Image 1 (cartoon, rainbow over the protein chains, first blue to last red):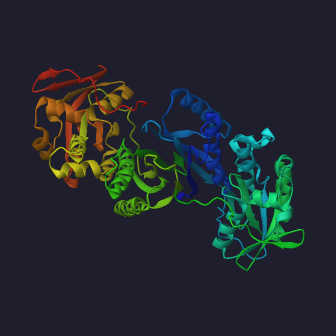
Image 2 (cartoon, each protein chain N blue to C red; image 1 turned 180 degrees about the vertical axis):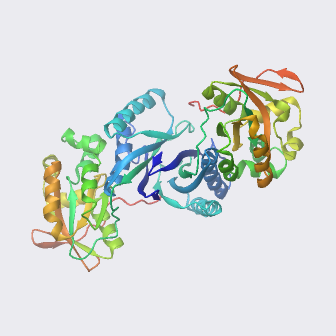
Image 3 (tube, rainbow over the protein chains, first blue to last red; image 1 turned 135 degrees about the horizontal axis):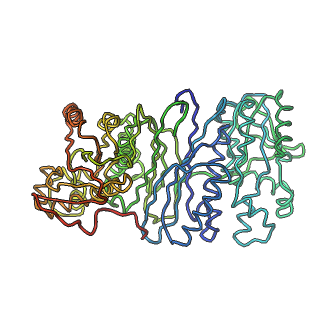
Length: 286
Length: 286
């Protein structure tokens, strides 16, 4: 939205109990996640957050208080003013459901998901698949607690998003799964991506939990909730991107290339790999 | 929010099935109401709507389609672009719940609820109490269908809000009940209001349905969902306000005066009237 010569970026994401978080997740972490998933959208557009509005369903008082404390902590961690919002008191027994509108200001160009061109490199920030493993661990599997933290407290890549925005042709956040989000970028851009499964960055904690097989890599690449940045940039931007990674101490990893042939093609250790049936999380009706 | 020299006004209101609308309300009317209640907030700040974001809980497909049709009609009636939003698929059986963020641009001063001064006149737009009567009729009481329409299709007073904003000391929309909203304006402004119960504008349809007794007037003044403008303005603005009412063919009615004594005081036909216990709808937890 262009307002008074300023480019505003607005996003509204909701989270629902039983869908986006578990009933026994700590309320403060739910609040963190609500803020973080929205700021991740701003990060992918290179926008600096300037305010938020909250839609809140009141429930049990102790839970609500703990949520409010966590919300305050998240807002202050991101320097995000809460400008307003609404509270409602739904009928007893209704699953909790919250919405946040985040407003950001872009200093420069706002990358869309539709700008990737043949010849671009495809990159991803951080590591992929941690959050889905963390969810399995939160549900009772045994594994490193660091992964649960990645599921409950995603870190929006605001610094990287702001610095990358002027360099990239297309950028989006990975929220539904790397493969499905890459396929959406490819389709929107009218290109295809060759993705090297072996190049997808997995964290040491995930490799400890799930191993490093082709199956484990496919599972990580089609899991959701990563909140990393996925971007396509011309090959001659590689040195600048590497410098950003170094300055922020955040891995930025090339995982593939764009070509004119539509769709996704995966390979691993030199061999083609068939696409899994499920590329990620689809927003389907129940 | 000041952005690039422009005053943005942002609001986020939610509506929940069983709380803000009835399960058998037509989906298109629910969509209308969601848009209208948010635009009513912008109207009270004198802001022109420039966009909206929707948070939508998916449910039964036919209902969702009818909602989408109604939403499209409402957005186009108000010239409001839908900029984005989110859909979620909550567990089956969850009451429907929707949120809308509306973004507006103010051409001039943005009236707060805290600016009323002793000596101001207190005004209200349109008529009061129709919507609550319409709800009773929608629930099975017999009465004029025009009142149901007022409940289901509130009209945000955008034109009046924009013209009144430069003239008033304080303005807000009446959503929880005239008396409770007036008491909030009084408290925020550090003044009190003397309100003439007999001056509160009742529509002919409401008088047909509920009569014109003191009790009927108290009920109308403490019912919610009116979405009219309540504003305090200096007495020397009376002629300009009357001219706006005439130009818009919208009644703007003086109903009281502000004084330094805090609180609300009601009178009717020259006699003081005790405040009812319940002044309106309070946002309490279930």
